Image (cartoon, rainbow, N blue to C red; front, side, top):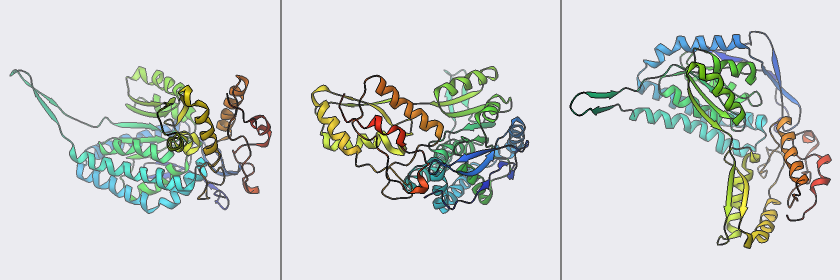
Amino acid sequence: SAAIGVRMEQLKNFIDGQFVKPSEGKYLDKISPITGEKIYELPDSSEVDVVMAVKAAQKAFEGWSETKVSERSQMLNRIADLIDKHRDSLALAETNDVGKPLELSKTLDMARAAANFRFFASAILMKHEMATDMDGEAINYVLRQPVGVAGLIAPWNLPLYLMTWKIAPALACGNTVVCKPSEWTSKTCYLLGEILQEAGLPKGVCNIILGKGEPAGSYLVRHPGVPLISFTGGTATGEKIQTMAAPYVKKLSLELGGKNATIVLKDVDIKKIVPQIARASFLNQGEICLCGSKILVQEDIYKEFCEELAKHVDTLTVGDPLDKNTFMGPLVSKTHYDKVLSFLAGAKNEGGKVIAGGGKPELPDALKNGYFRSEEHTSELQSRQYL
């Protein structure tokens, strides 16, 4: 399995260019979604750790914000090259953390992480200012300047991909950053710290704090020395961040949740469209805010569509993420696993019927405790009747 043979580690925070232990010496267990076993420990960071990281970022801001655009661009490209260089080890770490297929980690997550740095490395070379004539009375000149320290909080489903989507533009524009990945998926962001060291990024420009949303994440949002917050995650958490940031009138960038309908009309080629709809629904175990979470089908083709979709879904392999034939791995955590099962139970209680799935995938013994379908829920999901 992906997690077998992984050396037990105790991760550290990355502050001021160095890896440091959490100030209070507290750690959290990371449980593999693939095996259900502990694979490493990560800091349970406190407000003290956040303060240290913000101070380092503030200290580095003056020098980084005055660095020539061409030099910042070169640095971002260097980081991208190193992500490519370490792609295999980063992808394996992402798979162990999230449970997604290894091939997906390589071709999507790591490829896009590198591309994020390259895109913004090029974009800032096209930087321009703007002057507007005020009817002959004056000239209004727009000057683009870095804001300061950016607090960046990324979700667990595409950990490095989405964190670099935040880091790259912030650094490109001359800001310094303090990052906080999800406590469920911290490994690749931790490894990014090693890449930043190898790239020679000046100390304090990018700091990485590991831990839970409370206290580490919430204090990062509330810290008066962090004028910019970028958050991707759940709507309820986004509402709390707005409330915490409001007294400081911080700049906010919030990408919250997602509820997406796929609409299928009777003039479609059903056999052609079903594989695309299934991929849009179940890629990355369905753990993407852009995934199709409901399908609205025109009544004339409803039964035919359901039959074709069920037939196709039954061909999707659920199993070991290291197997190249695996389309779906386990869910990311026990918490999320229980949440998904509660949705299935709720649908059943409302009269819904399962038309595909419900069985337990064939797994080697090492994966029996992973967050796949469990035996206790198999029988109630076996009915293959249509709505």
